[in-house]
Image (cartoon, rainbow, N blue to C red; front, side, top):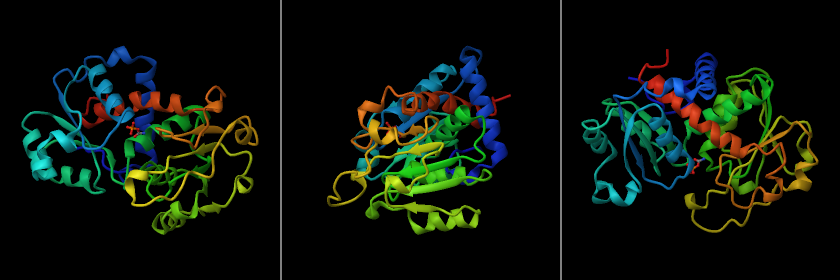
Amino acid sequence: MKHVLSSDQYTKESLEELFDLAYKIKQNPKEYAEKLNDKIIAIMFYEPSTRTRLSFETAALKLGAKIITTENAAEFSSSIKGETIEDTVKVISGYADAMVIRHRSDTSAMQAASVNKIPILNAGAGKGEHPTQALLDLYTIREKRGTVDGVRVAILGDLLHGRTIHSLIKLLSLYDNVEIYGLSKEVFKLPEEYIEMLRERGIEYKKCNSFDELPKDLDVIYHTRIQAERFEGDFGKEEFVIDKKVLDTFSKDTILMHPLPRVTEIATDVDDDPRAYYFKQAHNGLYVRMALLLQIFDRDK
Ligand code: CP
């Protein structure tokens, strides 16, 4: 059974296959309009979402599938009565052919997949992983540069709780000659386990303390929101805000990415700059998620 649970399950070859398919879908989405017309996809989001939920729903609908969904599963599903994720999947597998899940627990998608009844797609698991976001991020980088090899990326924001960061750096580490720079408040620095993972894969993570320490010819600046919902207390606002003045200190080819939603970390005065890629990035999520749905049902050929 094919699941989408973690960036760990991908190789460079399998990523290239996925991205080639997403590219073909983007060129001609109508060609895929009936590929899943016998399928029902359950959409179970226990945490808020705009992009991931609506792009998965749109992806399913554009492939001809039907969806069953609960808008706020934390409140309106029987989890509030104490039902486990495993029991929920056992029940839903009697109704739907696959399930997309977002949940506050880092292990939620793995738990759902352990039932092994229907394919599970991890749409964000606590502060652990958000693999489909990382896949669309990488697709966007590849679309811009033609290749991910040799990419030089700075990751900013909440590197501690940012599940998109954790999934993204795992995928980046599969490519050749990648450089990763980090810039965040000390309290949100990248956990040692991820730095060690990068080291084992031959990437020396470069921790920076100011914008001045970042190379000006980076390919990508990838900012993220402080995930205030993941910790107690107040650690203040993002101190490394990108506005037009800051962006203009970087190359004209440096693209600015963000999984969104943004709060204060990217000023709106850069939105019209051709280097602002975050809305293009969100749009690519549709095609990457269409490709993922085709792959889990072996309808990708
Ligand atoms: N990037 C992302 O996961 O956005 P949503 O929370 O809106 O799904």
